[in-house]
Length: 322
Image (tube, rainbow, N blue to C red):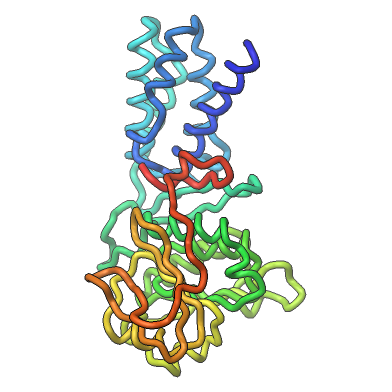
């Protein structure tokens, strides 16, 4: 295989691997590129490699994605194979048979590969709404904010961070693993979300207080119950944050006003948009529309970069958009 062709195959395999681990939408996969490569190949080695990089990936064996998602992926893979090759590929059908006999649990996993090669794995609900909340799944706003954090680690390095509405915990785990904060508090108001959050923090090797030690390389990590829309200035101040972050929250007047009274940097993101950065301290945060937070007075202290889908980026391999 020529070097250019080999490099193209490696990129294709990486694209399938990272999208599958993160359970991105099937339409986001490079199916057309796969079909083109299959038409120029006389064997099924590439499909077997994709199978090993996805369904048979060691991470997926330990922390399986949704059964329904895996089934849909395998059916699409089989369809692409049958378009080009007449002979069935036994390994694909055996993998599908195994999935078809597996019962869908209430929890599944998504995994994201960091630039270091390390991965972040989260246990999530298989339903968008579960236990009366939408906080048991990862939303795109958390992915965008995680990407921005990796591109701007200085915003969090050696600082105390409070995250409002942490949900499944992706943004916080990424920041703890890549941005070296001094301390990090995950928070949410729903008891089931908090239970899942604690599990995901421990799943990713982050010790929770009081198990964490002062000389540990990991930040001091806490999971706290906090209603971001009803929190008072004394409640927020008790966490002694230097930075407050939030992804995809619908903030009411109370929360935005309280944050405006704190001398902290505030970072927030919404699905499909760039994260925004603000500075509080005797300035009033106000809502613009129903979901965007902006400052009526004051200045943006760290102009954020415009975000592109991470499929277009080479330095940040998290998969954000489908």
